[in-house]
Length: 139
Image (cartoon, rainbow, N blue to C red; front, top):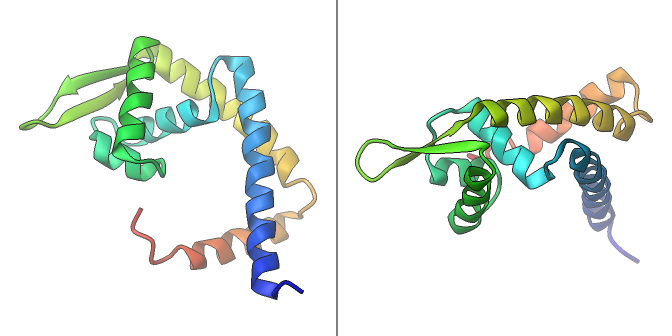
């Protein structure tokens, strides 16, 4: 029989997988993917950030983020600008800001559905517990 911690770990992963599938499907309606929207969200939170910082913020390798950022630049959603030294800064374009906002509206709807089985108190408790788990995480 599986241990309680393995069951818990799988349940967390299952909830995350369900949420990601639902978000990816719904974000397609506004012309983006979950990975792209997450990158836009990270750039929107920290305009001018480097690829290294944005890779960490989106849980990707620098190489994977660089490839994704290249696609976002090609789509006209992100601008790359020279920064200090060899640093390249990332900024949203007007189209990127519109896509980000459309994604926020979609995400709000999807996440409301994903967490509909929980009361507001349950959601607050879950958030508090998850924050305790990642409190020492520096990403």
